[in-house]
Length: 245
Image (tube, rainbow, N blue to C red; front, side, top):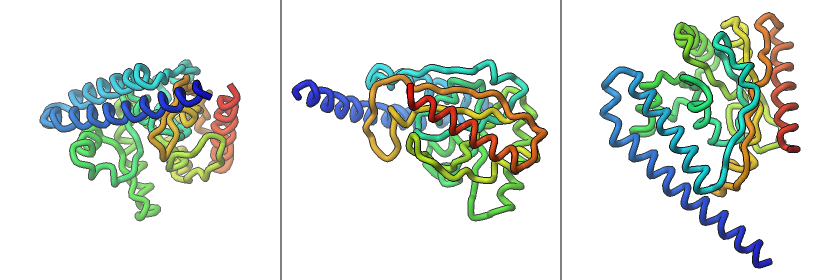
């Protein structure tokens, strides 16, 4: 019983400490390095990568969360659209480490966060205003095509639209289908189990190894319905398998 109490206290303390340092560190970088936004975009990219690497380092030494990457051979240079399972804040940080230059599809409201949102805007993130409906999809496709002109950049989309608890079924948004049929490029599904260690809607974090797996790409010649069902099947099946390990 004493060991259980100590473990709970350690998790509580380490989680609080990480939250305090992580958000303080993020705020310091965004505020004091914001003048760099007037310089070429590559400076903002380097700052973002530094932030991501340092954040994962803090997560490792304070909380004890590490990660393992599988299937990197499926992430070839020609594959530019990555469709990821979304369980945690972790993957929004980690793709800066796992890919060369990620461009996220994200909620428009994030751009209005002082300093942090300025970096998102300067980095060229593709904001989504769900109130606009079909006209928003046209904007997403147009901006995606502009982004893909630079082959270093990887489009990152979370088709569930929000974080989902591990093992819980969620509704995939159909915007991914529109992108798939318009961009005519392979889509790389990503499975992960980050929600086991960095759960949503709580500041508690648990030590362990997050596994992220890049799955074989889905070719761009499927029908819309076939692609949608295949994307969900591959992503959900692989993510459930990771929960058993």
